[in-house]
Amino acid sequence: MALGDLDALTAYIEDLDVVQRHCRQYFPVGPDISWSDRLWVRRARLLIEGRCVTVPHRSLTVTLNGSNSPVLRSSLREFGALKVDADQSAIPVGRRTLNLGPFFVYHPRMRAENGSAALAALDSGQAAVFRVVYSPADGEHLRAFLPTAAPRDQPLAPTPLELPGAVALP
Image (spheres, helix red, strand yellow):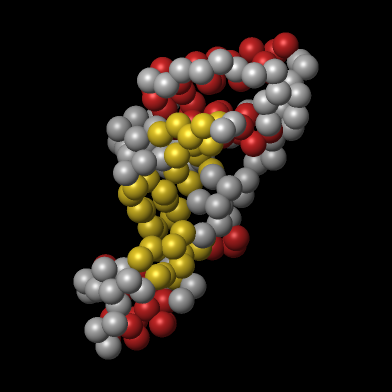
């Protein structure tokens, strides 16, 4: 999508400036900006500002290491909150990838799609490298936040992107 609208271009440049300063990686803005890049840069800015955002993923795959615990077994049997941390949050911008740092993927109502098989693998001692697919209730999208930026006393409700034409993800 070519951004012909000066206000939209200005807003993109402001968002990208915040993201580039955070990542300490600088590059010029080209004349054509994809809609996907626009959405990811806005999400990145909101994350840096300490907000929780909805991301366009509806599942999360976790590889087990063979360890067993009551918490893990519970997450495989029933709906519940799930928070997974990662070392890098890769945000695609054109041909580049910007890393915002450690982040969490989260949803308050997750279920293990293959929980019964994972429990059987745990019981038989075959759980090392078993892949569990978790997905939110009602087909919603996952949420993300940066633990170093998000206020601890703030709820993890997704922040709207507030971009004209952007559809809110459930």
